Image (cartoon, rainbow, N blue to C red; front, top):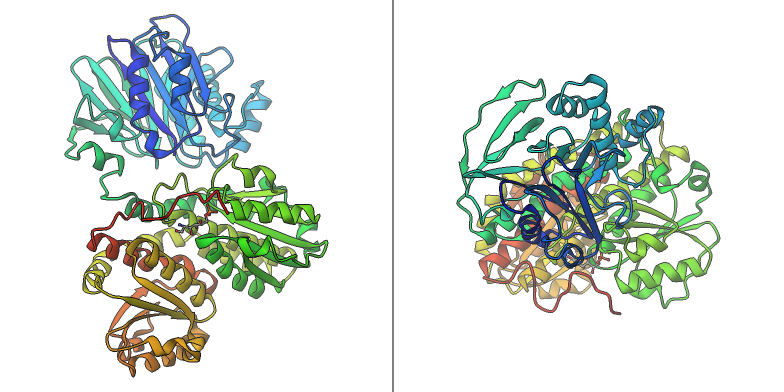
Length: 613
Ligand code: M6R
């Protein structure tokens, strides 16, 4: 995820900015840049692709950049590949406005068109350059000063942002603004520090101001003034940071995995907003996937590994039900050696968080060699799969640090839903009204995930009870089977407890012999038509001594007659239940691992990106 730092004082700024950025490296980035101001001289800009080391070397550790005021940025690509041109800071042509940005500007295309009509030119593929030039446009048009120009831009921008802005006319000031993207300001004597994340400024001060949503701040040397979007002054009291540096990296959470579990509402919302227009329709133009291509698809093959494969399993049910297109889901390591039968109108969808998984990449190449259309669902911009697939649908999860995927998995599911709804509407399987209804329901998912997270203490309590479990079985049918596959993998990889996911009807064909007194069996029952069937499979386990946990929708209270412990999830469209039911299962894996004192963020024998066969 991008990182922002800023400094305004009487010492050389660039070395301080580089040090601040180094504290944000753990968040992941692909390029970095600095803008430093030396009195009234023009802003000096230096950017470098790749590691911070490159920027460090280009600036001699910052010593080559004179000036006591500046802003810095580490970029995680969201719009446009990792490159020096796309790296921040961005500036207006005359360097009147220079800025760095975190977040996603959803209506950047529309704003860019407005600016093009007003004579602006664009050099990068970023939404940030649009924000910079929009501020410049309002600054020059209304001549109301920096706060006015930023406020006007904020009224036009849709999406999330944390912005740090320098204006040519204000050589001693940094301006910042934010909405739904964090920004913290610290004062220490006659120095002012600013960052997107606490670790970058912790060395200098623990007394910080949190700038509120849709607020603006003017930062002098050792001063900070705040304004609301109506340009009225806002009074603020500083807050004392009590976290140590390690806790600060995790935003106050104990581990990255739990932090990322909590970031899921945002990952889901950002991914929806990347493809759903203001009018509530799905726009796949960024993927360059036309309606004609959609109509021509004869069958879909989804290929992936691990959790991404589990997204594919859920996707199979969703696509087949909504679009009536035959779907096959396959592990990439199998697909690549199977000599698959692909007709010319097959669409191969490769799902991968990293975009670098060796088997998934090889499967993509195999499909391309056979001349079929390929679509990557990828989190990392500029990764191999993103570069090589014919079409790319980016998940907006931001960098994932914990080895066990959570938020990338959730974002991948959203891409699948959006594709399925669009395909179904274009092929006439569902009406436009039905599509609109499904999109409206999709938009409720972030809040519903939030509600499930509010109840996490119950799962924590339950995990403590089963921390010595030896085997755990997950059962479900249809989409619930896909949910259990992911629940079981999360359990295994972080808690080291043996677990298996079974299609509920399959249990009695062998595996039920492993169920004995006290064995935990977790049943997922989110599909109305399959509820009774799975319930009776749970009863079969109970009569062999199993302890039953039920995972079902609010309202299915009859489950309490059978299950020993139940977790309820909010009701939603049955195609989307994976997005909700997976949350308690991620929490369960996480809490079991923590209760057992394991390294939950880096489980043994696992790597975040599997680049070998
Ligand atoms: O980067 P990818 O999505 O291609 O990775 C695929 C799997 O290696 C990954 O999902 C793995 O199973 C995770 N550790 C699961 O949490």
